[in-house]
Length: 409
Image (tube, rainbow, N blue to C red):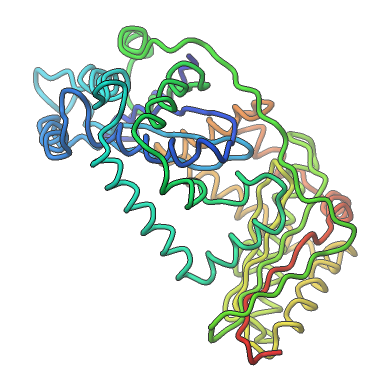
């Protein structure tokens, strides 16, 4: 298993984080999502959640957590623990206790006869169903997921990280156990340790308590639906303001110059309050209550998400496309370019000031060629106006998804 260590005295805590990476599969996403919570909340030794909470309290308030996300074309289960550094305590070895607990929850889960407890599973199902309902009630989120369903060919990319809601309702303890077996035997596993710790000590404890083999999973590429022209999708729904979600596709290769240019392009287009979309579409023309762009940088996909007046939605779409055309024509000044690069670099530096930020940045390097933070920042700083124009010309508008009220036609 790959071990990544950031030995730093910036933090009073030590974070031990495991990342389990598997191919994104609609048939296992729900099982893995529920499994992540079952591993976090109980184990064979601590068979109910209160016992686990009591044990964490005994470890000076250690924080055990887990979640799943879709990242690029992988499904990633994160399991981590944060503890106080031993140097602030007397006669304690919390680092070893943290590794022992991770070993306990991973290799001795709360199972009987090769199945997880149905009562606990039903509790987690209910929580995920509530989360899904919250997405439907948040029109911004709902519109974004409707956009994803319209853009992608793969069902796994169309759904939240916890999978298809109908599949979620049907799964049982035996299926989750089978998923658990695949996770510990087949997933690509990475371990991260952040804090004032000794590398040899981390290596020793990892070999003793987390003896995962070195594995590499194969990930297929992200596939969009094949279309001849831009898809325009309209869904009539009760809403006070129209919600417009737009998806663009670009030709981007990591870690070549197009990758860095794409990151800067997004910042200029709609990444912050100095961007073209914010200053022109929202501030000057008052076409949007809210608007921003975000990217999946390695996949070359850019999303524009906005809330606009019902009667101005067509004008807003046209204006968003006009602002993108301005970038293609190089109609932005050098000051905006410099501001964008400065903001991106500052955001990266800020993320490195948090244990989670370090872990996520280092883990992102497992999806392709690994580049150092210095190389990444240098790549951003080297981006020119011509680089941005070049990558902008590869961009095409794939889908527009609009939520609007019935009477707004």
